[in-house]
Amino acid sequence: MIEPRNKTLLFTAYQRLLLRVNPAYPKRAEIEKDLENLKIGFKGEYRIDQAIKETHFTDAFYVLPNVELKVSPHRRIEIDTLILTERFICIFEVKNLKGTLKFNENPYSLHQTINGKTYSYPCPQQQTLRAADSLHYWLRQQFKINLPIQIAIVLPNPNVLIETAPTKVKLLSPREIPLFLQGLDTHSKIVSGNHLKQIVSTIKRENSPFNIFPLAEKYNIPINHLRTGIVCPCGGNGIRTTQRTWICTRCKETIKKAIENTLFDWFLLYKSSISHKECSNLLQIQNRNTVTKILKNMKLEATGSTRSRLYHYDYKKDLVKQEASLVNLIYV
Image (cartoon, rainbow, N blue to C red):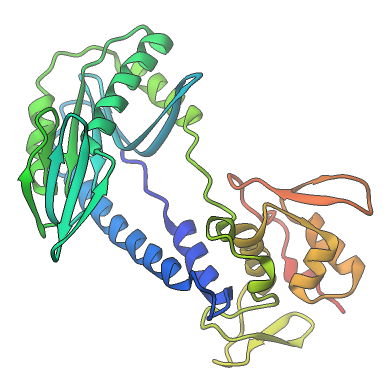
């Protein structure tokens, strides 16, 4: 079973940030570049997932993307792709780099040369070795087992030349993944199918990826540099034409889920909480009862007294209650 890589929310956040940020903001080019790198990285990860699907595993297997575990009070690990079977565990560190790569040791580093310019990065060999050592420790502490852990660095970009290869970690292209994994699948069984399910469930429960939201904080963008109101996906402003309808002033199309998407923008971009006044200013709705109903019909945790009340969003949950249709609350 392969867990999907859910990058849709992050893509959406970047796209909405570019729609709402001031066109003259100095870091706009940086945001655009980061979005492009995100797209490139996702394409590389997709190629890896497709290669894993081509693998003929003997028994049940689980593939968990983007795993972050706290293995001890003072150590956390990040794993791009974690593969678990009854016979072995495999860690893939994915580096979607191009150009000429030189893996240095003593001390560990990675040098990338593109068009005559050289860039230095933390060494993925060291990162992968550290992740394997930490996961070994965590498994012994949690389950008293010693599953063999194999590691590899995967380079999805075909436009890469290796000047100096790492000596302790294997390099793979996506095409090499199926045979590499099938070679590992010859180990004897170490755990039962039920025991493996228990391990996977524990990892998924304790997985705590870094929360990048609200995205504006990453780029130190002040709130007054972001547009308020209803914004169409095409970039035009929304104008309210009826009690429940907003039309884009640019493309003239009806803006679907105008309120829901605008409030979602707030939590993805601005802050993890919102006050009654902030919601009123954001949606440009002055009727206090209407704003109150909107906030209460969302999956938000309220704190504070009536005057200072804040509504907090949990990024692991849906924003809108299933039975609620926020547009139906707009009656003035």
